[in-house]
Length: 290
Figure 1 (cartoon, rainbow, N blue to C red):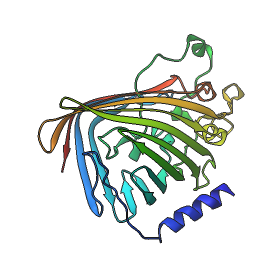
Figure 2: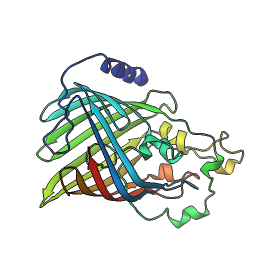
Figure 3: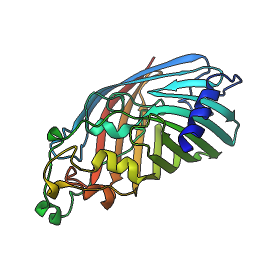
Figure 4: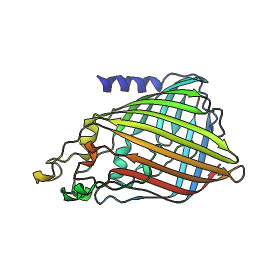
């Protein structure tokens, strides 16, 4: 039922026209019917919590977006904005499930960054490893398990704006029938200027259903003939924090720093595929906007 509902929303969004105000009051807006192209160059890394999972280097990060009247493409997300007012906005969208990015380096989530100041759509940082008790549990390399397929999520997202802050609520459903799971995200973001610096912070929590977690992090006969590795994932909440700092150099160039942290729930970290209870990233460099 949920899958049919989300598919209908997405199909409708492909045929209805209107007026999208893609450009907000801040300086990182994207004018409607225009391409937004940018690139960040620097040094950084995103950690991979999986056993034998390679950390993801952040060196060259493209930023690609296009907004029409109401439809838009933003770094791998294809959407349609139904309402865009000074205080409220509402859209439906399609995007690749980002969970697969930790199982395969070749994934858009490891390459594309969003238009909003190059702040990660999946914000993360560094933290302590999984407790020592995890060391006594069996581990299973992601190189030895069955392939995890890419999923496509369909979603709805609402925004509430006030002053320099924003509340965001998003609900997503796997419309590709890969894992048939759901996600719910609640986030608060705030921006402000301090002298010549542009500062941004995001704090949020992301609920992921048992079907989603079990598909990616669960272990069964599809992965190993040894029952001591078997694990069934349960639903859980992932809290996160992201801090973004920019200092303009000139009209096109700016210094850029991004730090983040994402705490993984026990329903995920108890999997033999996982050896860290966090995901982290740090990036220092420069950004150019064409």
